[in-house]
Image 1 (cartoon, rainbow, N blue to C red):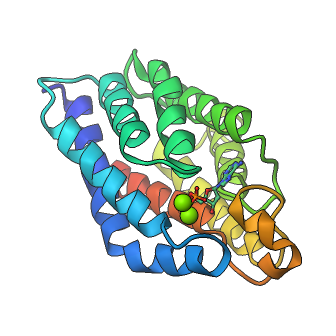
Image 2: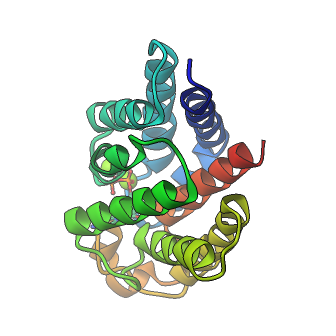
Length: 209
Ligand code: ADP
Ligand code: MG
Ligand code: MG
């Protein structure tokens, strides 16, 4: 297996394990402002994705990401399956030439673009976009303007996502199920922003290895 392909398979596995460990926490968050399935959706979907990519024969990074995304799409319904899965599939060609600082930025931007095309959420709507937008913008700026090595740029992106997750607590949801609650969504942390942070933390841990 190519080193990069194997590294991405390992990263998908690490994400799956983390989301299994956070299953109850994510479901608790979703029970407060949604339908109490986000932990199960993420844990089940990423487990299936990890099994699928582990069975690939000598895959490159783009194929691993596309395969994981397709599996998420088929395993997870609701809002998060298409948003995570569809966006991974759509952005996967950005990694066809391998993983460099430049292709990683392109991948992150294309992924974000697809999440926003599909879900039509903006920063402040109390969704995964509140973690993703600051993470992607910080990653891009850290690589392109500040000239940081990719792993350091990713660490900055994780910190930005963390602040984005905190920002979801005091605001009112305007997209997704939580928006049905109106002002009663205030004071609760968004589940999808939280799972996005966990995924980014695992990507950082994988990149540090
Ligand atoms: P469902 O709400 O269908 O049960 P999940 O519980 O798995 O799906 O995922 C809920 C998460 O999906 C929310 O916490 C939010 O972050 C995200 N989400 C919902 N709608 C949108 C949207 N339109 N754009 C971006 N993210 C969204
Ligand atoms: Mg839900
Ligand atoms: Mg649901």
